[in-house]
Image (cartoon, rainbow, N blue to C red; front, side, top):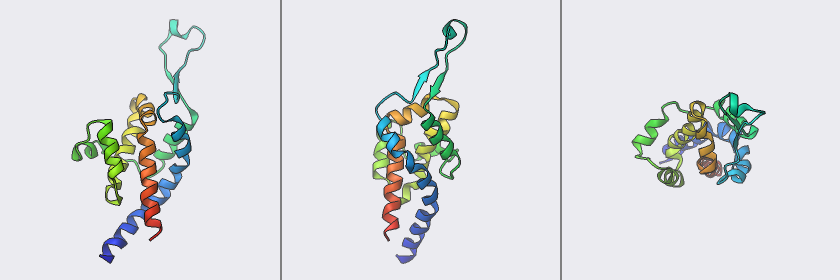
Length: 152
């Protein structure tokens, strides 16, 4: 039993620096959850006539993405988290986040990875993650788990 707790404490201590790097974005994510104001379409003079439009992202969102990419929290095999846990919808994803414990930290990493890494190839994924609150929920849950293991 004590050996198991020591192992869980080691896991928490391993995640702590990376999660602490990202929790500074929680107030911004709380303010933006449910809104679609993290990106806009660039519309310079006459661009619609002569060129394709492209999105312009909030600078805080871009900072979050860059900071997340510098951490060890991203997993390129995040799709396996979704198949292994049979997560198909945002509702199932958020239910998984709510029930997560220290044992599901890899699952939480996978969900965060979906939104950060997925946005690297399809920019709307970043907006979805902020709008539906999934990125916020993952960070809040990670913080909650690490706070629990900090008190021990």
